[in-house]
Image 1 (cartoon, rainbow, N blue to C red):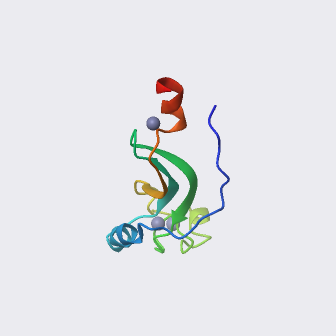
Image 2: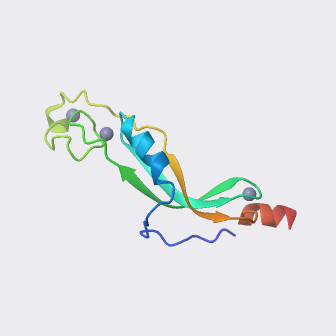
Length: 104
Ligand SMILES: [Zn+2]
Ligand SMILES: [Zn+2]
Ligand SMILES: [Zn+2]
């Protein structure tokens, strides 16, 4: 049984450098998945997901995308998001709950 962590607790990330690098090269919207990284088994357990907006008018997922664009049926805007970024906000030296079930 997986224990679900509470969402909506987005906090300062210690890996901000990586994120900034990534954002500088980004062309699409993408999700940032905050979670816990289990060093022993190298598994990542998601805790919450937030979306990074690319702030482009020609992106369907952006808040800058014109509201009436889709209704005109002329929308040729981007409909794909980039791959999500795994952002380990917690580090655990232990195995994840899944692996603990298997390996003890
Ligand atoms: Zn976008
Ligand atoms: Zn559009
Ligand atoms: Zn694991």
